[in-house]
Image 1 (cartoon, rainbow, N blue to C red):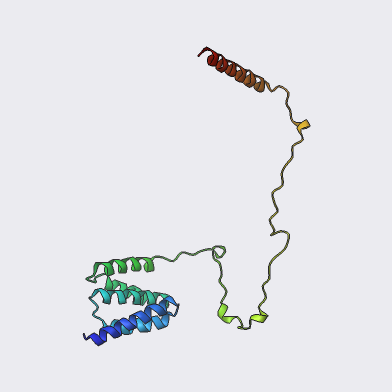
Image 2: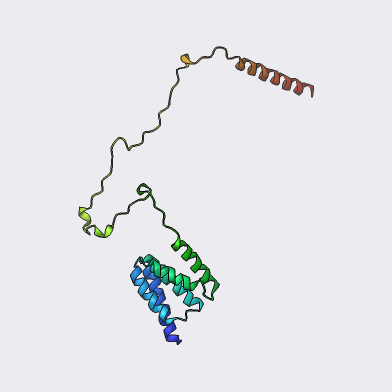
Length: 174
């Protein structure tokens, strides 16, 4: 492999990673496939390119291609590459769970929105049901409180008085 093809592979790899990070998965797949064809696959860099390619396949909806590539990469000579391939394949082969619709938040497609910002309106719900009210203090009518037969207070007061008297006596006798 020549130095020129290695530089070209690195350039394609970088553009593939940037495209992936920007959500342009088809472009990422194209760049990473071209980079993959230029690198020695059994090298550390070759494994890195292939891991990114598998991830781009999965993001582009080519799940079987991603799983198949990970199956090959599990036997890669670089231990980091083979470990990562095993982990990704495990995740992608896991059964998909059905989630109730109320658990999901739908994100609207902003690409369909007109670019005219003057026509954009924001609507807020100001109904009284959604507004939070400040907590109100609850006042108790003391004339309604039963204070009779509350002998504990007298026992506690006598106990405090005895304790204070004992402390004063100790203070003068010390």
